[in-house]
Image (tube, rainbow, N blue to C red; front, side):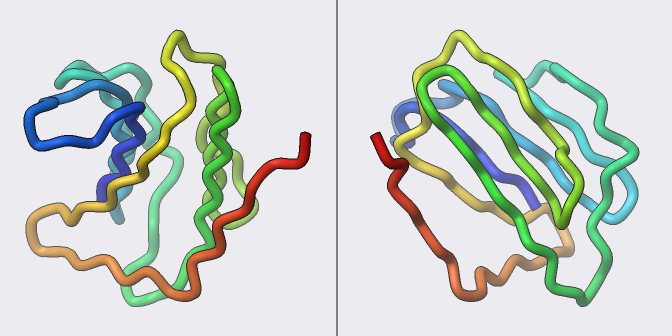
Length: 105
């Protein structure tokens, strides 16, 4: 699947942020069609539930898959207001019990 983390998710905005592609064989971080980071050591198992955690706070972006930190970096982009999940060809994504939390100030 693909997780798009952008400051604005609109049809008219082709790519305004980062996209995280996770599959059974290969994963990568992409921005505007260019690979930012190869993440081939992280894969998702077929037909299994995997906990995905996304932390977007100011310029910090952190993504964990299960108990592995897939991505932790400071970005020049503002925090994402939207998370957009998409499927890769031949796959499906089911969100089970999503939990959204506001950060304490």
